[in-house]
Length: 154
Image (cartoon, rainbow, N blue to C red; front, side, top):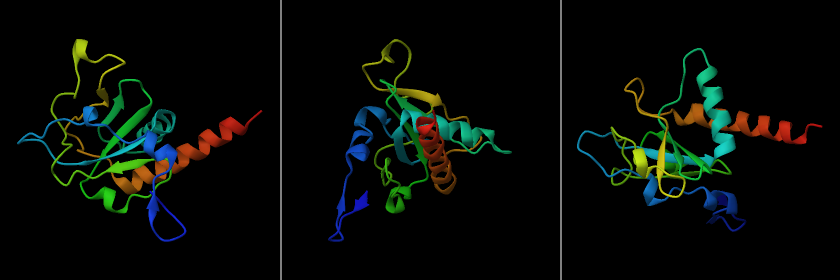
């Protein structure tokens, strides 16, 4: 969210378009880890995934994509939403009552079509449960700069 002149907060149109829907969250399970979800436009998210995977130690956790491939959702530690303020993205706080890392994708098989729900771009693998929000913020910033440079080239 961005701050308005009077100290309140407002939601930008970009942020509003990239809020996760209930369809992109899995029901809580006893063995699932709670997490928050940072959603971004797909182009920026894909660039960020590449940046995070190119490092000496891959630093990206599970990533969801929506059924229409408009947004990507990065699973981050619970409580991340408290301080998340990156323009063009949204972070949904779950407080242990919503999104959890499920063992199976939220939508699978024949149910995973372009008009319904989400699927894993990078599924949970047990190596690292979620993406570090500080590292994600840096990668999203770098991705935005790369996209801007590419769009302004030629």
